[in-house]
Length: 367
Ligand SMILES: *Cc1c(COP(=O)(O)O)cnc(C)c1O
Image (cartoon, rainbow, N blue to C red; front, side, top):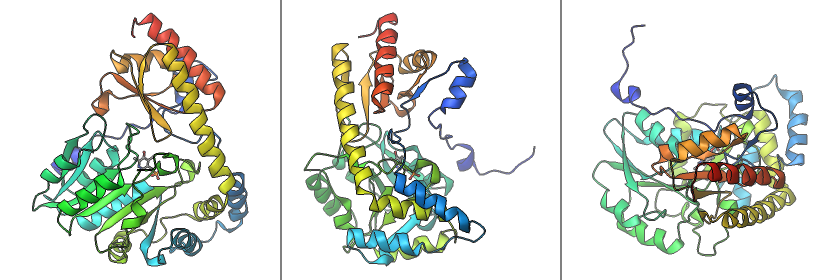
């Protein structure tokens, strides 16, 4: 086919999602496999959210409320912000795209850590803008190096707290010193997809900054701790002036009616959220203990996933784990050729992981 395609679109790396369970079972002819690859909620979804979505099925012939009134009001009240500061998205992924589309021209620069969430790079490149990568330093965000990369062309800095895939955090102190060093027009995005799991008291809470005089944007999602990844709903909190830009490029009905109903109910279901957080923390301890027994190094996390140093080609370990029916992530494409990333699952899933991992590491002579 003859197409005229911009070079910057041709050179976008395609996002590789975690392998779906059905696909693994089909390809390998196995059953009862376990997926610990996409940082999903092992406890499922809030029952209250599921009930609310079932009730909302009655109204599916209607377009959704394009403003998402109830959810926006609920979020604004929860965080003590004006409703004008809240923007809903079809997942927080979509808000990343709204930010890049409304802020970036071809040739502009957006800074992000390396590794970081691939959607930043994809959305920046979709606009013909330039992603500028700043390596993490011993798995942590290196603010000094980020500040040093700011130029006249810099429009956005993408931060992620806790960091995916390392599970490290940004501290309040580190962030404040950084904010002082960068020009006032640069939009600083703090993607807090895993913030609910963070325990460290020094962890930055980005919401404190998104009503100030600086363009700071906080992204949050219902996909992880709230267990609603499949319905696609996330939100951004930001100064009203930035929200106004996003509304210009936003699709009018981007947050669907089931998602709005489910998210409203999920926000009220503190019991499910607290159970999830407590459960994940307990299972991380269980996994750490199992990996320590194997004499293998891992990196403790502030999120619901963590890195393990397999001391050999992580792609080979990923493949060998697949054959054992366990889906994890190889970090080769993230620039960590010897690390894998594992999400805390149910106890029986974590047991299956440890058993398979012991077998794989034993047979490959790792550790
Ligand atoms: C999972 C994740 C998200 C959430 O994406 P949704 O589109 O809301 O499902 C955002 N950022 C990071 C870093 C993530 O890992």
